[in-house]
Image (tube, rainbow, N blue to C red; front, side, top):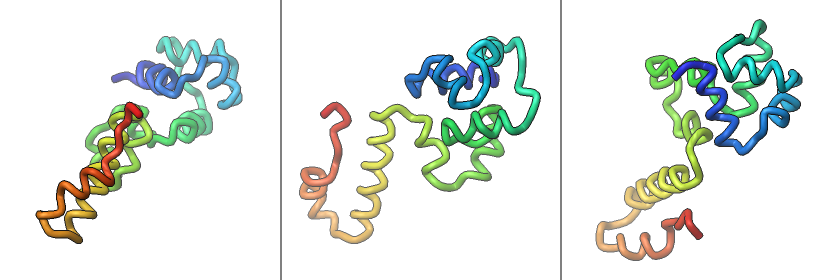
Length: 122
């Protein structure tokens, strides 16, 4: 995915208008529109860093560099910020389950499911 597409998708996933994101970044909505259409690219690193911080993602993620992402980001937090709420809940449930499983016997699985797993639809 190209930078322009990634930027547009991140903005939409965050529920922001171009105007709202532009204000957050300290640029005009028109310039942001150019970035999202691929007509222009940020000229300075501060703008790129501001974009990454606004969405809590790495620059590698913005530039779609999967090799760098995987090697530089061993924790769950690198990708979770870009997931929708349902996927994020599933990842959190899995992590909770794995922690719980390492401390309990297999016979208590039903108890865990009843008390810990979230329902993203609720």
